[in-house]
Image (cartoon, rainbow, N blue to C red; front, side, top):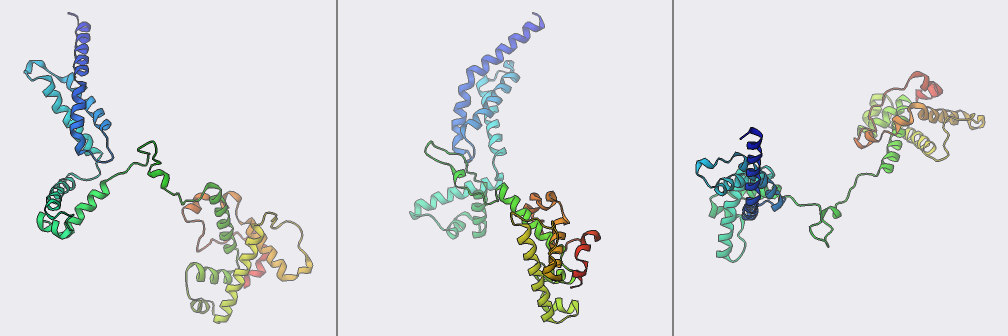
Amino acid sequence: MSAPARTTEAAKAVEELVTSHLPLVGHIAREAAARLPRHLDTDDLYGAGALALVQAAQSFDPTLGVPFARFAATRIRGAMIDQMRQRDWATRSVRSRARALAAVTEELTRALSRMPTDAELAAASGLTEAEVRQVHEGTDRAALLSLDPLASDDDGLGAHLVDHSPRPEEALVAAERAGYLRDAIAELPDRVRLVVTGYYLEHRPLTELADELGVTQSRASQLRAEGLDLLKEALSKLLSDDARAGEGALDESDGVRARRRDAYVAAVAKRSTIRGRADVQAYLDGAALSAKPAAAPASRRDPHAAYRAG
């Protein structure tokens, strides 16, 4: 007989063994179903068992005198056990202790006609109360629940989960606001910025900041109020729909203070690009606002350099 003919005949023999013994896989899977973790079902075991059946048919040697059903059953059970262990989050020791504790719980429940307490379980099992709680916690952590519906009239656990993260458009708006605030803090006059960042971002007492600047606490409070006014001015103008910060000529009738405020707002608007300011990922990572902003280039500070003296 030629080699191709022998190969074809062997393939047919393997196919016949697999086809005729597929019911054996279902029988063993149903037997093992009682030990299944919650996140596994019979189909998972059936798949592992079917693969083991094919491998058993390919490696079966009839000359050894062992019936194929017995040979394959050992392989199938082993594959199903491996499947359960691989998909189980609990260790073998936790499962072993949990089974022993479950047996004790069942006996005490029958004897007491109620669920036993941890102290009673500990006394009956030889464990401490802490160990009993550890076993319960270990099995609870290993229990998985499906987010998908289990029945046609069930919405599933996934339907009751609430996503508290911002929607894309909300994250974009919040990131832009945080970017403007970051730039507005960075463009504050030096002494004002020190007080604002020190008091609000570093949570330092006002007396400490006043000592660092060499001024009275009352003056430090004035600098803080001045900084808040500037921040409010910049954000209210830059975040308004019709804001055109830095555009157009300044009104001379507003006086020096108004011109300095306008120059400050213009510098904030020019400090960063739209792409950098509205960095959504930085906002989501919590890095949109820096407690110690980097100094802006001199060319951008020039519009209100006189105002920085504080």
